[in-house]
Length: 507
Image 1 (tube, one colour):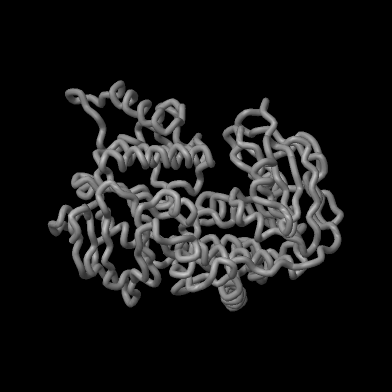
Image 2: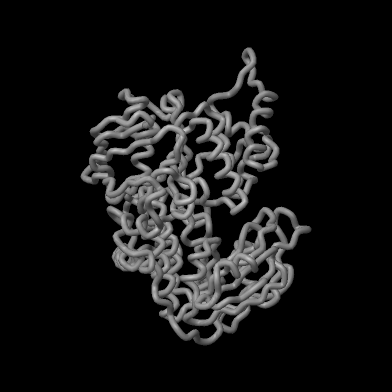
């Protein structure tokens, strides 16, 4: 083992029943360096990280710390040895404050009492380092998703960590917050901390990492110093395809107007004095995919949620296939032909206690019931058809939804929307936190819906996505539409210039 390797996996195998999640993996973490672990959903990244962090135990193989074999009994044991993990799915308690979440189960005590003053001082310093001026007493449940992610990061930073595993740490962060996190990561590595960085934003890996390791189907298929590789190298080894093959052919000539937004204005639900959607008018035609690009504060999510009925507008109207729907309930909008795939799949898109099949058919109960009873034969047929169409990888339709990777969970959310046979399909950040292979499947589904005659409207903060997956690009800034572009001729610089960078808190 090289002298600068602080943590290593050697011939690690992990078997779940008859499934081999990892197959003889060798993996090195270099002292004071960032190692990017890259791979599609289901490649084995999270399994390997859970083993390194003491969450899981390897079936065979060994873990070495400073060249010596270790066997972490638990995540707490791993932390005691200096190995901490920030999980992709947040593990915060929404009913507790920021401070209580950061010090949960390891409170600072003075005598027999918790030293809340000392904890507050420490939390304020952590939040200041992350440039997030929030009170430590704020309930986590009152924070937006990006702020919750920063609290998870602050909790990891509060520990005496030698190896920090970051699993999708930027999936809900704004560009400004990502910049701050990168600064903190560079400070940590200068102090000798080793970082394992997992992200589906491959450009982040190229910018930040010193080494790249690619997993596919549970095996290491490539590794290299980051200075010697490029995006094409990463994509080829990840999925065996060129990057240009990720985006599907779009529908072509658009048809009649389907979804029409006329002069829509919306206030922030948490701050009614602040307008987050300001006099927006927009039309999406049958067979058309329209991408809405904007940075934090642009109003993308508020616009889409208002269209779907989750927010109320104080001015303007929403029309679907010639009928006004903004006075209708969410359920009646769905009946009229509108479907939303929300940004936060865990909170808003899935029921974690239900199976893959039951999650998928929640939106189509009328199609699978007869005289008030579920027709299991009809349900099985619908689910099998939708699993095949959306390419969901699951052992069984009866499997718990939590057993699926993030990309496959997102396909279930999209499949649930498609089962309503929508005239207009609205998607908020449909590829957040999923790998490039799953993204390609999502784009293919969007294009297929458009070719079938649906109007597709999606919001994204990814320049490459909006440029390659849209028939037309709409740019928002501070709640207003600032530009409209043809993807075939626009440059990314022009899109960024129209989006502005001086943004507020909401997306």
